[in-house]
Length: 552
Picture 1 (spheres, one colour):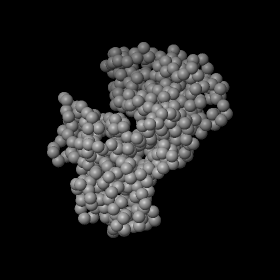
Picture 2 (cartoon, helix red, strand yellow):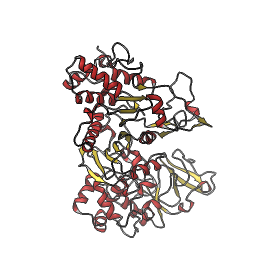
Picture 3 (cartoon, one colour):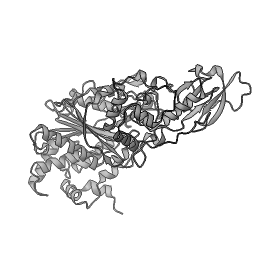
Picture 4 (cartoon, one colour):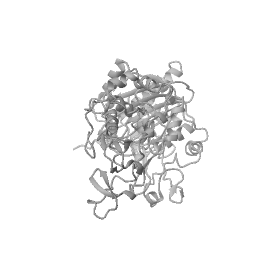
């Protein structure tokens, strides 16, 4: 059987271009892109969507001129893996600068000049740097006899990679989330100390790598998303935002990058980055995929993925496009900083303004009543004792593994709630917080009333506590409404339901059963807006809430 990877890597640049156009051979980079990793490889089709967005912006800013026809524009991928951006950029530059006949000396000279003068990259690892060189130069040695860039100054060409070490202060790296326990390795092992991040001044690094006069007009890429920060896979911390910040520091004319969309409403350690992004009026466009599988087939990234185009000399509203289950919304011009999070659905903005006519006030939202991560101080894995025997003043602990018993004195948080009626939800959102096949959300699961004498583990946050069962039941009915679950969906950053998730939900008095009809009337939600909400949120049956661990 023919190895398609070997075939794809051995083709000349012109032959790869010809076969791509005629669909006569599978693209090896599509195969690589299907691999799931924290360093997600970009499919060629997706890379070209980003380059199309760049092309349109350049033309708008340069009186219709084509960026690909300009022999002086320089490009950098600071996080290259498969080399797909470099390859697709090179194709476009060759076509834009005359597109000489296949096999001609003129074409060979043009390809060589583009690859040595216009296209540059920083590799992520030894392996990915080699893959990128094979993809772009058709040879791991840019100066070798099979290279399509034979005038390269070194075997690495313009795709630089050298093993970089972490800088430890105590047990942590000063530049990234790496721990000494997990990443102090032998000389031969990959350190994942990415060069662009492990430097106090990215500009001086670029000068050292590519020369005194080097400045990049365009930076494009798909950086690594996260890094295990505790060793042995204890936890992971995002790292992609650091690449965005370092790339901005290089002051290109244009910057376009793929990132997970978690930064828009949450994410570990991303509050400052989110505030920076929302306040940056140079972000020209955002294309947001609610489900990552629509961007990277077969790759599961909680919260979806998106790419943005940042333009140094642009100041204005951002054009936002959202893709949900194959449906692409019309681009909407928006200010990004209307709220403390990025509202992914543009059509939701008008509804939010009706709910919060004087501006969003989180102190008047349900989030002020929702418990923290551990409502009563117990982790998800806590179970309690199987019987009350030997326990002084026992309290029932409700967990995902069933009920157990604990001493009342062991409750370290919200002890005043023990003897109240509690409205609770499951911390894990249905389907990981993603829309279903119809593009609609459930938003919450396991909405329950928990009776006095019961407490919950981390798996079941308490939304609110009440003196009466009736009030708790009414809160559960409120949470089941499409209107509330729609507001929750606007702040869903991943598969976890947290206090912040409730920040758009008004804290209404539980003096009645709040139905969708009453909520629509209260907030003057138009028929079109009602239809929009119902197109995004699935109904849940509202009946009398069951108590203890029974699910509503």
